[in-house]
Length: 416
Image (cartoon, rainbow, N blue to C red; front, top):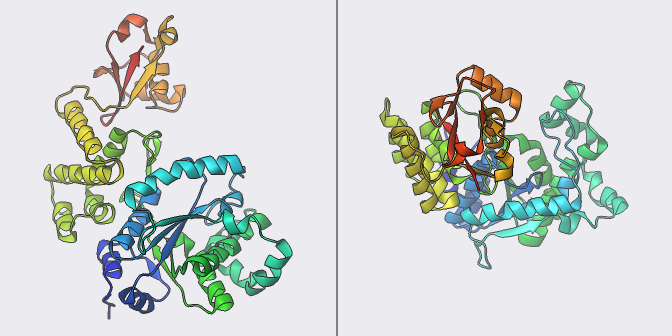
């Protein structure tokens, strides 16, 4: 018989598709029904911005807070120095403290769009695990914490086993990561009463280790809950596009490009993504997702508007939609297209369309630009580009120049 949750949070998790696994479904549900359950998700500071791949778990924290519980966003100032080896084929590049600090600063603004931080019982708090990891005494840590871990068991976790089965090197540094993450859970329970860790299903082994360590050392019952690792219906990893990662910071990806990513959702994913990434009622998500033909495009616009409003605000969503309608329905330019500004010196001796495509960010290299032109996928001011050797002089930029890669990706280039 399928378990029917009593608590509002667990009901949301199951109804909207967030739940992949739980260490004790009924026990956690009872705890959530009884009162506030402080809950954390950890984020290693490996880049200056979070990306769409993180958004599902951020939405879980948002629902957690909306249903009366305290979110803890744990920044991995300490664990980033080691790097999570889970399901990776190689070792992460090691970052220094200055870069880690800059990355954390870049990530913090995103959380403020989804969570309310403050001093109240259910207000979110942000914690950095460098607070307790940086000052660890190695011998004391081995004696007090390391003795609770079985190497045999650690080797059996799929995240480690898959790496070793492929005969790919796993450094001792990386092997220690799961012990440090387990210690995070213990410290968060000791300092903040944290009783639940959430994460993607690839974190199951790390989460189970933390639960076991906390039970052994503090004799406290804690829980773990995982979300599915999302791929789109065509098999791509969620958060990736032809142009690279879909960043959540507006200084790394424009509002329009973020909006357009969601507008380009495949028909088959629309209903599922409405449930996961918006706060529309489940019934409305299912109704919109079931639309067909041209009507599904309106559902995708609803999806794009709702997701963009949560992150960037309603004005940004409206501007992005207006630009999209101008570009796609009327063949115009629109006010919100990604814009690259060149100096007059850059075009004084002329500039090739290949360089323009690269500078606009529509392609990553000159080789890719030439291939796009050869395959008739590039356009200049909506006219097909057929000559990869075409040069534009300064007079061509009396007005902004519109570049297109395929039907859905556009940019403006202006000269000042």
